[in-house]
Image (cartoon, rainbow, N blue to C red; front, side, top):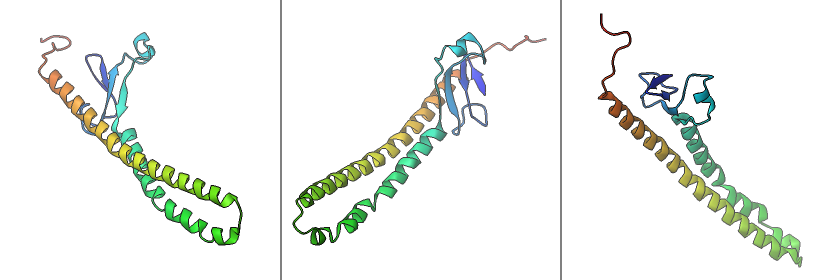
Length: 144
């Protein structure tokens, strides 16, 4: 961890502002009343990117479901004869097909949105860092 003016940056291998890193908002030393206040803002790329990948996987996994559902229903009409529940079965199947397609669309949308969050956080981190770069701070202990 590295800190700048009461701001803690976690999970970064370099000076605290690298692309692989994270931003953590106002945080005091571990165990302090400031840290115990629960007001810390923390984020990192990893969870966002894993969630985006998970959404992409759901799109892929849900892709063949409609055709699998169709294959499972083949022959049902012929074998059901004059069952009145056949119309209900068709309505339920159509409902599930709509829900599956809606889920695929939502997951496809979420993956891109989560990646955009990572990009936005990275840009914000870089803007904050560049703002601090121009600030002169006195050295600790003074010059001798």
